[in-house]
Length: 109
Image (tube, rainbow, N blue to C red; front, side, top):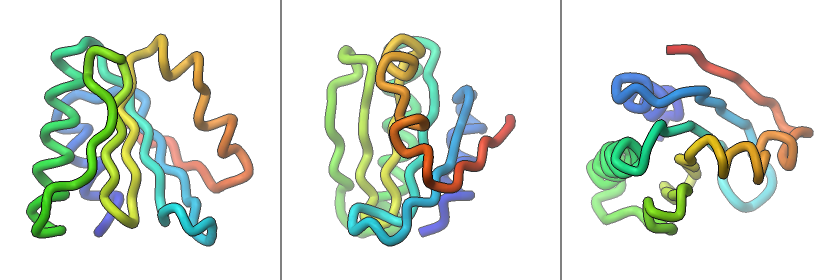
């Protein structure tokens, strides 16, 4: 699974501030992608599109954690973990700082 393809899906669906972190070697995943949604509806749309892509490759439904009403949805695609968050949750949890020692690649729309 390629993180670039997920970034493309997020960009096509107008996600903001997309970051890709290389977290290989930690037994959790190879990459972590973090993106910001602008509303609960946008959060659901982004999560649905990423999950649909993951299901097409994995041949099974990916693990999805967190209702969109929480402002944070995690989609586990085995080698890639995708966090889709509203601004408030993203600023509060600051995952990029938490995983700061890993290579981070900000992307632009």
